Image (tube, rainbow, N blue to C red; front, top):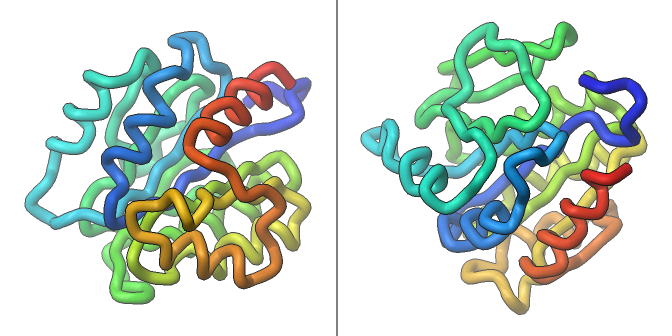
Length: 192
């Protein structure tokens, strides 16, 4: 992590309708994008590599499934493995957990966002995209509490509006953007 940069990491939570939304955002990011992007996508446990393969074809950045005790590197997109919670430790490594589901989900967006907020504090950007439950809303509150940036996809544009709407209803979302504006926002903060 570069301490001279304003932001240290971006976390994205997405559920139903997520493949199209995430693909749209990632496809315009340059290969030399500086920040790590960590994504929780709710998916079936039998989709072990499919998501990563599809997304890698659509983006220029290096993309991989997060591994236990792996050091988080700048400029890499990390995807949570199916059926494991993904957490960030104080030494900027990942840990995986098979603990109980949170809001019917494993991986849990809330658990990633909360653990990331403890580590990155005001240097974290949290983004909630399309989805059919309220996972991520508690995490958005935590990111906001620690001074991080919070973003939700405009529910009117989302394929499944419930998840971004739940995040917005917390009162802790700073920016409500279309997917195109989220993409522009990420390109902008990459320069900070």
